[in-house]
Length: 129
Image (cartoon, helix red, strand yellow):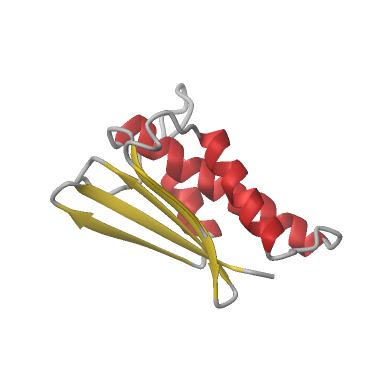
């Protein structure tokens, strides 16, 4: 399992989180030869990017990041400093963005939000192929 908490992740960016997820998937020897495995990896990396970028852009910065495989599932946890629960944003056609929360919900098997007084943790669970 890979896990980081503040202040150790102060400068962590989306690409760093994606690298952590890649390493976790490689550690369980997920063969990338099948189309299903490649699609899973792409989905897992996209969910990771969306959750970490949302935490950085809208949640006051990352306070926690972890990724591990538990009982046949990839579990990605992203914490930030905001107590506001994520929500769907009405898309403005003239502006980029606004799809991150929807993408995470559609690609993950399960997404949960744990709000605490100091911030929140979003957990995305993806079933391994």
